[in-house]
Length: 340
Image 1 (cartoon, rainbow, N blue to C red):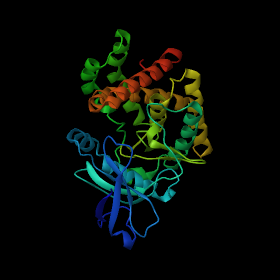
Image 2: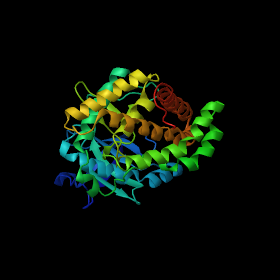
Image 3: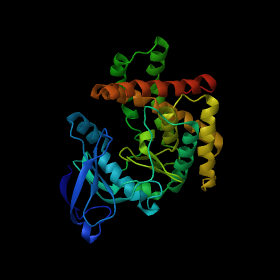
Image 4: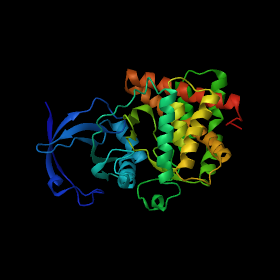
């Protein structure tokens, strides 16, 4: 049985709705997935052939706290505003959206993606799927490469790569939680200094619109296209973070150095073909190394909390820790060290 919702768009809505949408009664039913920092519902209304997804803030207090600290709704609404001229090519269309409580809460009414599917994060992506995503996200990065729109976009932070800037504070609790070897624990202990260097490095590099949470269950694969959902961690920053997040967190099996280079080259070639001609491969590879260091903070800042919520959360926390660590260590062992 579906719930009923009367929705009235505010005057400040970033995508002013059609007159008929200003006050509407929607039938809601929960989606099959549960967002960590939001709740989502399928939405429909009588006399309207379109299908929608309604996204609102989380109910669990700890998740609300995270949403407030990360300002997820302010970031997502801003990202959809920037993406609107692309007419749903890389993301669902947003029909209306607003944020409240300093970005911690809000409401988004977006297009329901039909004829496409996302993948289970526990299973991950194959090498051909990773290559397809890398090619597509590079085209999107090229659209916003050093764009002045980024500076004018209220709500979109610069160089806030998830919670990488908080790694030093979270590291002690992560090391108490995780079961890693002495060598691996030493590897993690060196990370805060490396993260500081990476953040300083990226402040001097080209910026673009970065998804910020590019993992398999935020990616919809259609027959001829790929689209990205959940822009609540979007930022203005360096595009290699999306690439490292994708490879380190969503590869079905850890990639060898040769495989990482393959996916990296797909991404870089796609950038060049999309008009970014002044970005040498050698510079891009150096940027990727810095981005991998930043993605190693994801298990440190997220995994212990994720593990408390459910049995799936426990499994996912262990899995992402293993994936990011193996990806980084493969790069370290086979190439110039990211921890030097």
